[in-house]
Length: 261
Length: 214
Image 1: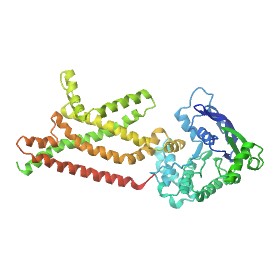
Image 2 (image 1 turned 90 degrees about the vertical axis):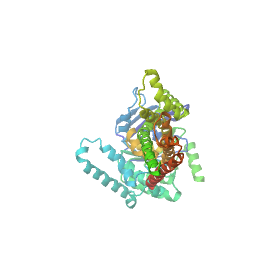
Image 3 (image 1 turned 45 degrees about the vertical axis):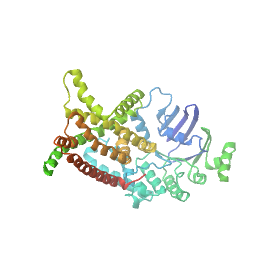
Image 4 (image 1 turned 180 degrees about the vertical axis):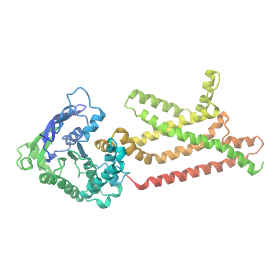
């Protein structure tokens, strides 16, 4: 059974159809990259799957369980949406760290709030918090930030901020981790450290979907590459199939353009 | 009338000034937040209603509002329902809450959407996102305009004398009846000291929130 199955997602903003029948599925431990020029609908697709946008139609299944059905008459309640969002983690292009909290607090904030809903929270508050902090410190160590845990985002470089935000997303143990152009807001010399972290996660079998413009990185890290254009999945295959042997004119034109730059 | 007696009388007037000031702040700060939510409501009729209310309150002189609140209910009901003091406080609270609400609104709307979205995808409720993420950032952003309003409030309290409440200015004015003018000028010292303390307090708060930037 697929870890994530996206079926026929459609989304329009006013009269503009941004996503037209987008489908793909992802197995446990797989890494999939989504390529495509700006305006092709990559980010909107990620936002729909993460419930930041309300898709107009289609279905989303996690582990075989349907969490979104566009044809359902009843809209999802805020509570259901929240529960659904916890299946996924999302790393934003612009990091979106909380500026008033330290790196460590950024990572522990959501798990601590979530722990309040546990039935044994009152009795075991101290142990639960200690456990959350322990886990957060381990995650920050994993992204190489053990020595910057108590710094505020404004004291960190862009690359370090993005690594904190990856740790923050991992802290809730998402089944699938999404990256929305994680290196686009970074200086070129800082993209390497982010790509290294993602490669490292891929080796540990974290299921990931990465929207990126870094072709060579995508080739190296992905099991599959999806190429999107004008709200449609144009190609879906191994890196080799899509990047080297593509017969599709749109894909070739896109790759050509990137090579020229 | 020696200097010492005048000072004591003015201090007695200052007590009312301080009371109006403190009560207005304590009540108008939360009320302003509620009004700002109303003015940003997704339910448009409510938003328009609240915005019209804010327009009226900000558009009519505070002095007139004090008079209306004190005299008009009494005119209809045959007897005043509010004491002088409570009508003054009510007028101040409503008036300042409306000004505060616009400052809050500006602050809240200046927080990037990404902050809400980051909280949302981390499974936080709307309430948690507001109180744990947004509010602290709003406070930092609105500190400077808030200090302006709060300092204006100190001096606006003098409007309470419109309906015979003896605050600082009125206390000094009473001496004018005896031909003594200097106590009136002397009140400036009290206002300056009051505002001086507030200025220091706001500088302290600003410094306290200076540990992070965007």
